[in-house]
Image 1: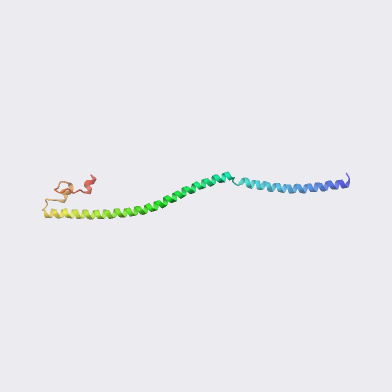
Image 2 (image 1 turned 90 degrees about the vertical axis):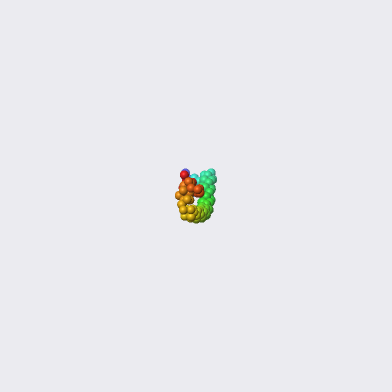
Length: 135
């Protein structure tokens, strides 16, 4: 070959080597970008995950509402317990007054009317007791 042709071939070879190196670098970059994109979730997967998280969020919201309702139920239960305690106190007061009345009658009638007989249901006055109601 002529020296000019040979020089042209060498220069073309060097240019091709440089282009090959540039293309190799571009190929490596494209491969790394592809690997990164493949490692990220796809839109369908993200939509599925979003739906699952939305469902979980609804469950948590419902639990929160139940907890808030429970707190208000606890307040209502406390108020109800207070009312029951007041009624029980009033009932005990009335029971004590009734028993005192029957004891006073027992003393006034010299034992004709007795608290035991009245409570048992065999006396002249029929008194309903808690013990009798349970039987």
